[in-house]
Length: 217
Image 1 (spheres, one colour):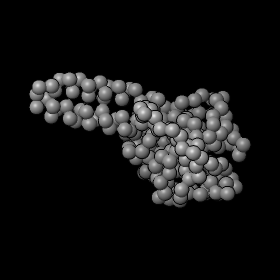
Image 2 (tube, one colour):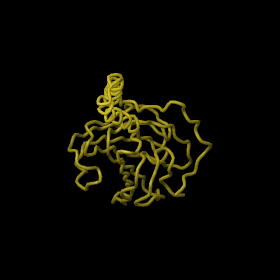
Image 3 (cartoon, one colour):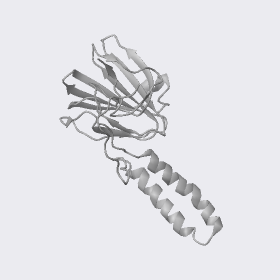
Image 4 (cartoon, one colour):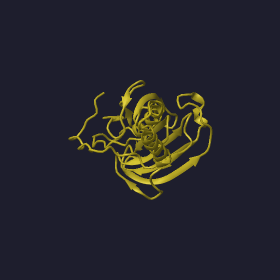
C-alpha cells in the first residue's frame, strides 16, 4: 500500500545519526580512524583495517535517522519494518506488530499527536523479537492521550538489544510522526489502534515510520 504523502521533506547533505547511538557509534568510528591511520604504508595493516572500517560503516548505517513525512492519516506506523501480526483484541482494540530487522531504521515515531501520559519500563529477556515468547522481553510501554482516546505503543527489545532509549518524559506533547525513542539492534514495535478503528495494513506488508498509514477510513 502506498502511503498518502504531502511534499517530501528536503534531504540532508549529511545523514542524521540517532540520538542515543553515541555509546556504540563513537567507539566504532574512532577505531576505524585509528585503523586507517595505522594502515599507511603496510598492506597487512590495510587488510586488517578493512573489517574495522566495515564495522563502523555498518554502525553508521544502522543508527541513521532520516527525516520522514509528513503523511496523512489518523494513525501512522511507529516503526520501519514488516507487519508481523494484526490482532483484534477482546477489548475492541487492534494490535499491529511491526518487526524491525537490523537493516531497518530503528528510531520510532509517534503514530498520532497527543500528550505522553505514561512511560513504563519493564525488564525481561532478549529472545528474538519475532518469537512468540518475546512477550516476556524487555519493553517500554508508552501511553498517549489523543483526540482518538488513549493510545498505547510498546517498544520490545530483541535478541541483541540491551537498551531502549526513550526521547521524552511524561507530560510531553508530541506531534504525529515525531521521534519518540530508539531501540538498539533488532526489535519490534506494537501499536494498539483504539476500538472502532479498522486497520489498513496486512501481515507481510512493509511499512515506514511516520509515513505508512495504519488505519482505514
